[in-house]
Length: 64
Image (cartoon, rainbow, N blue to C red; front, side):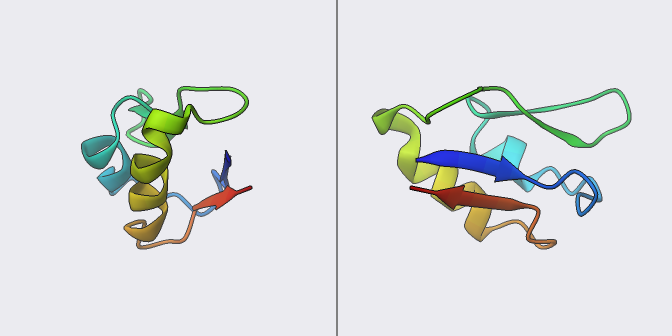
């Protein structure tokens, strides 16, 4: 599983950061930043999906 993040859709709700701080951070302007590059560790896959499911702007997708 990998995280795809569309920065142009992000408006800074930061739900992803609140739900999965191991996977997301916030930049100086308040927008999300993906903290990992490459596959999501198996132990964090549920959190990655939770973050994607809760993004109101659909800026996050998880792909197998």
